[in-house]
Amino acid sequence: MSYSIEDLIYKGEKSGVHGWNTLAGATFYWHPDWLHIAEDMTGHSAMTNISPVKGKANKADAESAIIKHLNHPK
Image (cartoon, rainbow, N blue to C red):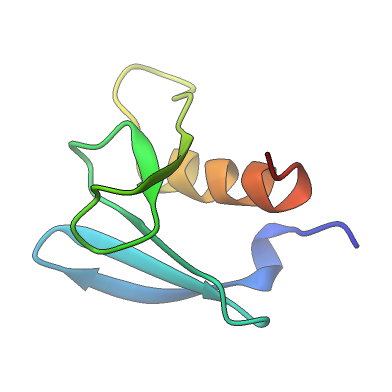
C-alpha cells in the first residue's frame, strides 16, 4: 500500500506541537523547533528527519516526512 496526504488525520496543535494519526492508528508529532517527526508529544523519540523544501521546516514539510516514513519505513 502506498500512503498519501489523504491518509493522514490532522489532530490539531497543542502547545506548539502538531499531531496526526493514520487510519491504522499510528500517531505522529511535530513542533516547528524540531527537525524530526516524533513518536511522542515530547519529541524525545525521533522517528524520521524532516528535509525542509525552503529554509525552516513547516507543517507541509512535516506531513511530507510522515508520508515518506510510512512508505519507506526503516
